Image 1 (cartoon, one colour):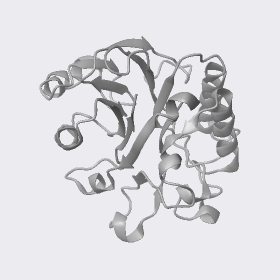
Image 2: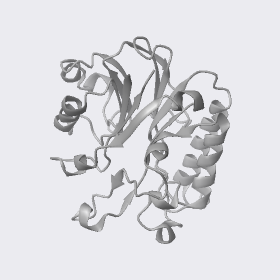
Image 3: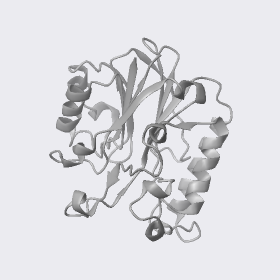
Length: 264
């Protein structure tokens, strides 16, 4: 059994106490973090190693973005793709060397895309679409068992958002983004593991805005975080869940962690 977790932590140094809490309570074999918001030398490597996560691949930058994969299983850094095409730290891939040997775990933070879903007036939206197209070209050539996890910043299904009609023109749920993500999915035949276990149309959110005073009462969530796997590997997934309660922890991220178990 190998368990893999993903979490957009929204500043790993600020939220180190809840990362430590999560690792103590859930003890996943691998944790993929997005939006670590620090350079590599600032990453709390020693604190996480003290909890048994001594194998680490960190791709950071000053103040923004950044991804890190920490593991109890030996790993080697496999790749760093610049799908943003501007040097931002938004991806790191690792190959597991212990249990699950040979599996590649890709950790990605797809751009949010700004406010207006129109690339002619909002360059950030165009960058998001281009990022996904570069990922699609990459996925077409994959020939190894792969898991890709992270903050995709797209909620593709109607049941992935609190109100489908109200969000159709809101970045993260527009038809154009959903179609672009579907092309990425088709390029490798990915399986959306979350929706294998929490079936559509069941409610399934991983993000709630900080703007809501009471996130639970409003429950205006979106499923922006995903765990996808190569088709054969996905068949070995034995469980999937999310820690929605983490949205209530002290100084929480606006995202919650997801965990998938694989029976290998």
